[in-house]
Length: 89
Image (cartoon, rainbow, N blue to C red):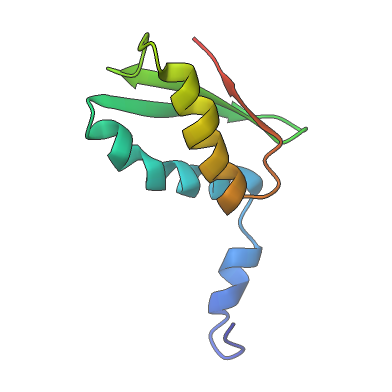
């Protein structure tokens, strides 16, 4: 953290939704490489994250595994406040 320019303050001041959005952006290329994508539908006051899979991921037999074992795990690692990832249609 830098006292002179305040660059460390930007990390502290990010909202929960901003942190989640950044984490989603980090997993998006892997999904897109398989013809899919993910959309952040929203977050709630309990720190649940609502996501919608798109493209090839939508309706894929492994979609729930991708959501829980992939996306949710990564989001919780990068944003520890995440309680649960919920898939929406």
